[in-house]
Image 1 (cartoon, rainbow, N blue to C red):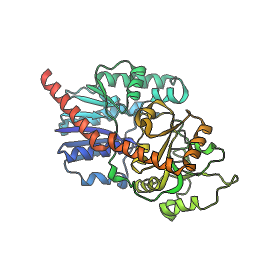
Image 2 (spheres, rainbow, N blue to C red):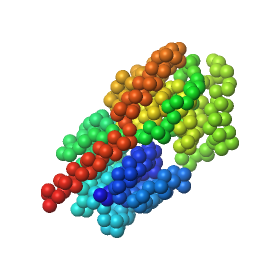
Image 3 (cartoon, rainbow, N blue to C red):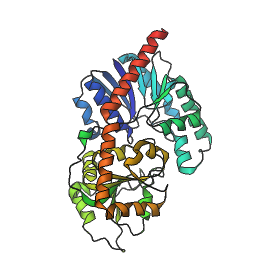
Image 4 (cartoon, one colour):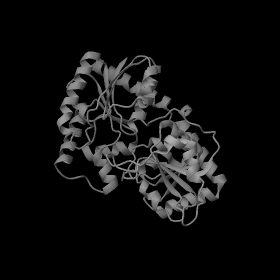
Length: 385
């Protein structure tokens, strides 16, 4: 079997792609991988060097949701068509909607990782307006119309897609997965909660953590604090290392005059792994979360999960997390105090999250479900021929 997969190098889709491509390679599947959104650095793409049967084509074409991408989408589609002609895959696995409309005689699986319309509804309570939004809606609808199958990472996300773009004739849910062995569930825990998100990202709502009144324990937020293009703060990890950075943030005595929430900037993959392994609690503040890989990584690190009470997080975590009232900082503070004051309860929820993740959200399970889906699409194509 030979699958062409498209990905982007911005955000969690790249980690999803890494798990999928690695698993497919281990199953003996040939993979042609084409990425958009920016050419990844050496560290970001090093994992590809170890995989047999994988050919990688990085590009810096802009993603369909980016402002100013419209004029370049045709160029990126032409590039992708040339790769398809050269590589001759049997099936396309697309992480962008636009390429679902490609005129090729191959099955096309399109994955709804996220989209602008559902993001806007979740964050602002309304769809975006203007000519760009109309253009975006049209390209998504054309891509979905040309897809053989729409896959969503949660039932909530599939419902959003159908609400925004109409009912889909062929669709299914395949939950995302991560490899448990990449994380450390046995590390000694320190007295802090971790979270991840760009401070300016309204969907992630990390700003809520900076508004906590009298927080009961230190909260460390990993992620960019400034917009791309703004002057970035110095990254303390370059001089202190992650261990030193965390120690420096926890060392001051927390008092009413000393804020307990601290932004520690962007971390490397190894740095994020260490941050989660030593954290007692992970806080998922998102208003918009089609699935949520960061909480999953925290669960595999045996963190108790405190989550915003939104439908998608409820679907994914069930009774394995503690929820605070939607977007309510006072309720969030109460949940943190509850776990901080009751170590036995905190450990119980950490174990719940870990076992729930092992049962439902491993990369191995995800890859097996995609393999079954690929086979069904290829068999359907043979029957229709």
